[in-house]
Image 1 (tube, rainbow, N blue to C red):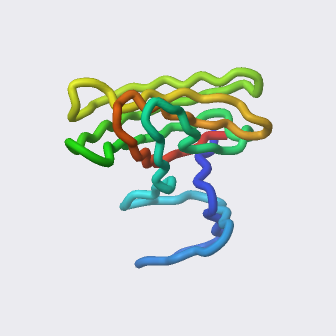
Image 2: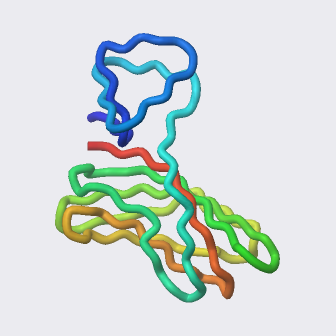
Length: 142
């Protein structure tokens, strides 16, 4: 099993301190991390009573883990967070939310997944009468 972080690719690389990589990078060998390595998704807005694609990735990754944050944009500010596990077999996709918590009395959004061509799409359905913004981190497994 390998963990794939998109856009990272380093071979025979040894360093200390901060480094910035631009473009696709590949890591060969062992990586020892003392900090966090996360891939952030741009914030995606989902309008009231609609669903929207909030993330997508190549079907070549068979499993993924996401951490999602959902925020309201007007009125009383609320935040929901959730971890999502996803697996697929190229014909069906399963997504399981767990560790859900929300500052509101009810959830702001629920998540689903679908296969669309060569991609897996993560969808959020807005459950409140306010526009919500979804931000995600992700880890892919191949």
